Image (cartoon, rainbow, N blue to C red; front, top):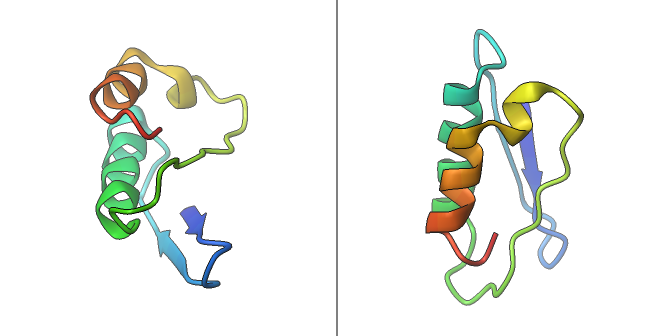
Length: 68
């Protein structure tokens, strides 16, 4: 399960995946990107120390989405 929270308005987004993989994590980050208001300047991710959180695909996602 992955979750996101918007402190500005209290909304939350959660998604359940069968496994915690790089593919599912990048998919969730993409969902958060689409869910977050466009006027929001920065999006922060708080992650644990699993290898999927800092895999090459995640770094590429961050490079393609400058507000992360």
